[in-house]
Amino acid sequence: MLKRLFSVGAALVAATLPLGVARADVTVGNLPIVLGGYAEAYYQYNTNQPQNGITNYRGFDNRSQTFTISNVALDALWDWKDLVGRLTLQIGSTPDTYYAAEPTRAGSAGANASGPQMWKYIQQAYAGYRIPLGRGLLVQAGIFLSPIGPESMAVKDNYNFSRSNLFFGLPFYHTGVRISYPLSDRWSATVAAYNGWNSVVDNNDAPSVSAQLVYTIPQKIAFSLLYFGGVERSTDAPEGTPWRHLADAHLTWYPTDRLSFIAHANAGFERNNFGTSAWGAGALAGRVNILPWLYGAARADIFGEEVASNPSGQAASIFWPVSWVSSATATIGIEPHERVSFRLEYRHDHAADNMFFGGNITGDGTNLPFQPNRDFQNTVTVGAVSWF
Image (cartoon, rainbow, N blue to C red; front, side, top):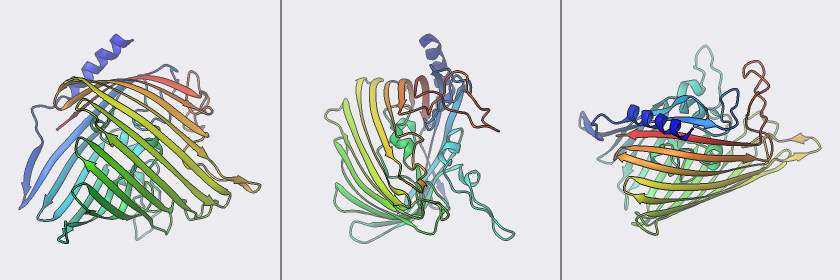
C-alpha cells in the first residue's frame, strides 16, 4: 500500500508544481499589491474502510480513497502609505467545511438572505489604516482568520498535513473590527470586537470581544495569550444567551536552527440555562529538519468537553458529540522545491464513543443521517502543497 501511496503523492506533487512563478508584485493605480496563492491536494487511506468514504471529524482532510483538491487560494496583500488590506479567495472542498457553522439568516422582498453559500469563497477580507500615533495604531475591519491557536489555514505553514482537534473544534474566522499596537520591538497587543465564532452575519444581537498579547523573537520564540468572550448561542436557543469565556495560550520555541516545538492550551466555560458547560484542550508538536529537503514532525492532542445538564434537560454540545477526542500524528515532509511540500502522514484518532465510520454504515446521508459506528480511525495520507 505504501508503494501505491508514494506513487499517488508523486502525481499530486507533479500536478501542483509552480510553473516558474514567483510571488508577484503588481501595481493597481498607485497601489502596490503583493500577489500570492497556494494549492493543496491529497490522497488518503482510512483503515476502517468506511462505506461512505468519510473520515469523520477531521476538518479539511475528510475523504478517504479518493483524490481530493482540498483548497486552492489566491491572495492579495497591500500595505502602502498606512493603508493596509488583504483579500484571500478560496475554492475546493475546504470552503464548505470552513463555513459549515456560518448562521443562515432569511431574507425578505427588500433584503438578501445570508448563509454559507454566499461567503464560502472568501477566506479573509479586510482593510485598515495605520494611524500615526506612537509606533502606529492599526485599525482594521472585515473578515479575519481566527487568532486562536498557532496553526494556520495554509497547510504549508504547519508541521503536519492534517490540523489538530483544537484547530478543527475552535473557530476558523471572525468578522468585525480589531485594533493592534506594537508595544515594543517584541511585544504587541490587539483588542477586537467581532460578531462571534464563525459568523459573517451574527445569529444574536450581542458582539463578542477579544484581547491578545504576543511576544516574538523571530526564529527564537513566539508566545501568545488571548481572551475571547461573547454570546455564541442563537437568540432562540434553549440554553438562553449565556456569555462564553475562552482562554488560549500557545508557545513556539526554536532551540536550534533544525528543531522546533509548539505547545498549545485552550479552556473555557459557559453558564447557560442547564448549568455550566466547559472544556479543556491541549496539544504538543515538534519538528526536526533532518536534511535541507527532509523533515520529520509529530503531534499529540486531547480535547475534553463537559455538557451542562439538569432535570429540565441538557445543553447542546459546543464541540463534539462525545465527552473527549484525541489524536496522534506523525509526518514525514519532503520539499524537493522551495515552493513545494510533499507529506506522508499517519494519524490515529480516538474518542470516548462512536463518532467515526467504518465498514457498512446505517443511513444514506440524505434522508437518514449516517450513523457513526467506530470510536477510532487510522489514516495514511499523502498530501502535496504548492505555493507562490
